Image (tube, rainbow, N blue to C red; front, side, top):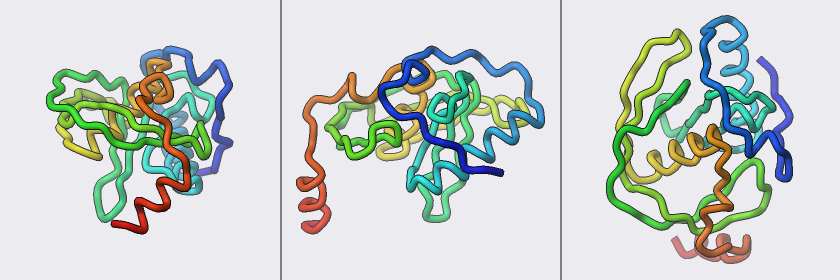
Length: 162
């Protein structure tokens, strides 16, 4: 397990549509483990393979707080509902935050590291994180969805008020 460099904008890898994973092997396991270590070291809650230089459909979401790490391989969004606007950030856009509208609920089909197919439903913050990472796999950046950019000072004031 190793910490990899996070690719930051501008870099064409971030807007590349990723290839489907067909080999569920030791290389994939190493990538998933490295991505997790990189995400934790970067203080993130999600990371996608293109953010560490790999253009394959692999993403991780970990909200912490005793929740299980979600590994999304070849994910497909099969259902969405609701809508909410919240502030997002991204490891590939250091210190850039913006309000983004996303579905409140999502149902996803994906594979795990062994290739087994599973289905996952999520709401609120977890759904937002999953959809953000799936966007990365299609070369879609959160900055293309920003309604309004938010300054760091504004975020810090909101955190103090909560």
